[in-house]
Amino acid sequence: MLFFVATPTPFDVRGKVDLGLLRAHILWLSAKGVDGFVPTGTTGEFLYLSDAEREAIHRTVLDAARGRPVYPCTWDPNPATTRYLTEAAADHGASGVIIPPPLYYPLDSSAVEQWYRTVSQASKLPVLAYHNPQYIPAAVSPDLYTRLRADGVLAGLKDSSGDPWRLQRLCESDPGAIYAGGDRILAQASQIRFLGGFISSIGNLWPEFCMRVFKGREEQLTDALIERVNLVRAAGGLRGIKAALGWGFRSPLVEPEYEVAAAIPPREQA
Image (cartoon, rainbow, N blue to C red; front, side, top):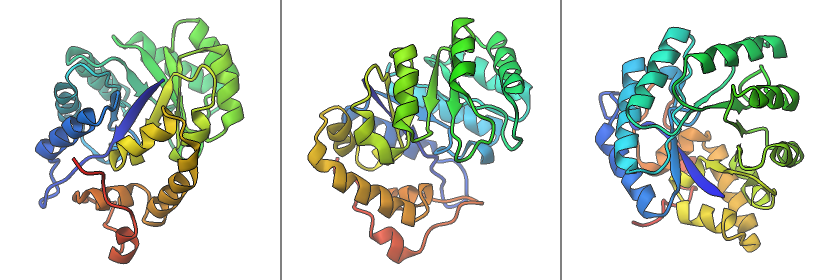
């Protein structure tokens, strides 16, 4: 099973994307043994980046990854921009793209299905759907996923439901094509048969620790995992991760209170 890291976006003191810091982070994660990367997703603040910023981030990650698989999130409210970002990612060597359903509106399965069929027709790359009920009201149901997968519309699914039973059912119906998200279930995910891999956010801070939990199945680390997840969550989730990395912030995210962020264990040493 593969272990991916969903990378945040660093900003400098002027609020501009710091591509040099991002490159160094990808090289560090690669040296730690991470299998691949997912930039500009939920962890990457994609909703608050311009298309030019996202393309530059994708190019930087792909170059620094040095052949490791990279699956950028190329979603945009403008379908033309989604196509542009997906085409650019293909030109720069991405392995595929991750695209959620349209955001904000609660859509039924027929609308979500039409969205993915349209996106897939315009894509040069394999498309992975993204199910994240915490943030996205439009669901990718197992029946819809199975139908779109059978028709060749989708190449896989990132599932951040946090539901091991749903994940196991999906994996049994489509072995190797399902990737789990949501670090709280990292230890449980390691027990899910036929899972393709895991996409982690806290892996930005503790990649070796996370891989010991996931790949090494070191169950004695489960309590420590939950403690770290809770500390990050108390500091605002992504905000806590960026604070622990020492990275800059840009609106709407702001740095968490020092006392809360300071409780997060430091990043692993180089």
